[in-house]
Image (cartoon, rainbow over all chains, first blue to last red):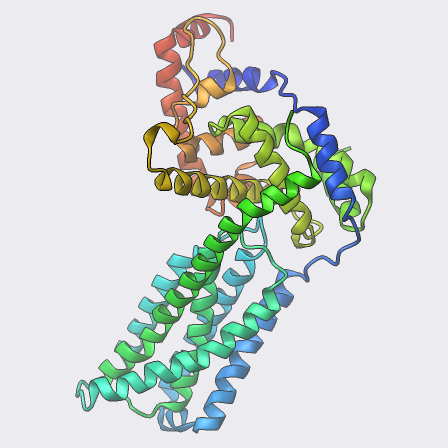
Length: 249
Length: 188
């Protein structure tokens, strides 16, 4: 059997009338009509993406200005020329993914999980190519400080991003949380690269990069918890809706 | 008039608070959204509830539609979200049930009768959920590959792959029923 024949059978079966109870449609129209008023559509994707990038850069610069720009001052020109453009591209991709997760029916070029994986991997490659000091002086104690500072910077970035996108609608809350966490984590990494003057390869590769997956995991977890609650709440909501639109007879 | 542009216009008027446009959208899109739920093994009663819930969520999220973007992927993305929530709720309820006899009855997959033209639900029943929804959107709702990719938050390549695998299964099924032989022998 050829594809065209299957198409034909599907076409035939799809043409069979599929009616919906007209009273149900009237009930839906009535319940929507009672709260119908003009709404302001979301701004274009590029505006929201640009605003998210600005938030990330502003938070990272603010954090580094407060703590000191020791890292970028100690870097060579090559290090600056590779690290910051790489971070810039990742911030742009994460911001774009974040916006698209909040608009139903958007075109998804990169899945949130793929973005997180390839983002971390590409940063590891850049760091491994640039830093060759493999000593590990105070590896854990100095590393934990950087991880915590990175996450502290990620927090305001995440909150501001959420404020900007709060009118959106995430059809997959976990993916949206993952993308938001990745973006916030990147703000933390940008700040660490501006500030941290510890150029031990393993310190940067492990502790700086770790800010991104930890932040993404927190974002996904929070979104999953909120999503679970809204699903549980929807049961109550459905009951309330039924008072507006009475159940089927 | 191009039906997509027509839907876009109705959606824009709905966003401006036009009740007639909202009602027109409800009457125009509800049958296909309802069928989308029925094809995913929801009973007609469940599909009614899901449809009602979908419209309430569409109403809440109507500002997230941006004019110029395709309308159907936006509607279907929200409908999918409702279906996933429904699935989670049902699974949770079933997991919490202590006595088996009190668990909600799972609707049996519709059976095909050999020899006669099957109905859509029975035809798509043996396919996995992801393939079923892709074929339903492509062949029943008449969406393009790009639109299905948008609605399912996946890539065009992934949609093509699912549709191809779905067709392979349908081919086996239809050949098994003898429908293929009858049709292959007939005039093209």
